[in-house]
Image (tube, rainbow, N blue to C red):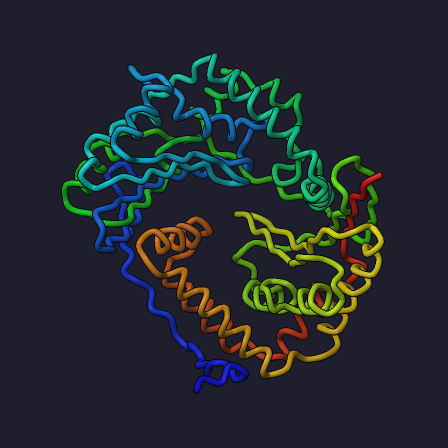
Length: 424
């Protein structure tokens, strides 16, 4: 009879198998990453430009361009594009973040020839109709108002503003006036200056054949469009040890964030901090979850997070709770940080966390679409997909002494910016 008091046997995962990922350049220099895997006749096409916030000349210009690309191109209106994509059972998503703008297409392989010309026209013949620009502004102003009713959103906006600066690309917060100031000239300027062939990547995944390769090459490899170069402006000296208390009429709980400026994925301490963050609050069995949720019941969810952009990054601990628990939670957060600074992580806990992460990585490499997302993350941060094996090898060999040293460098209370948003 099965004894449910005894957990399953665990086995250490020492190595990962990274599927074949092919990289090549089209004749115009545009880079293609191909993951030819899977048994289903499904294709995912992602077009990514280094054209996010970090190169903006005007606030929200990157978001406006990426959103409006699908809302009109030569001979097709927004409704016609949407209807045609829907007719072929395909889907499209556009977006932008701190450093990149992207379009993601999913389609059946048999409909590729019908879909890919739409994608081409979106990028090389966009029209940005005035009525669609007005819709974009109105819709996003409404979304912004809804987001500002969430205390957790208010803490994130404020802490990133403090870490990077309120005028910095990674730190500025969009406002209603920013949306109202969006105009067609601004959109055309960003599109012309920063959506080129020399800063573009195409990620293909799924069932790929020679016809698909040739069509992509014939369409996207024949245009040459160079972008305007813009150097990244580093954030000025960040503040530290600052405590900010805000009052909000939103919701019934207080929102808490405490964190600091960090680094991007290419920093020498990236691997050890990734492991340290997981132990502290990066998974359900973390120390913050165990102590603050499971043992004390102060909150339903608490986590520590690392946001890493192309040039910089930040670390923060985040939770929401009843106002009377704010101080006890913060005391326990800093206590857990002090413990990690003064006591080496035990062998059993360290093995468990490493196994958990290696299992997560295995899921990340399961299936062509997941592999494509993995490859994109590596390539856009300036690495090759196989470099990830160095990351995992270093992580597996990480010692308690290395984690202790990292905690002593990065988990100091006096370096943290603390933001609390409480209801009336």
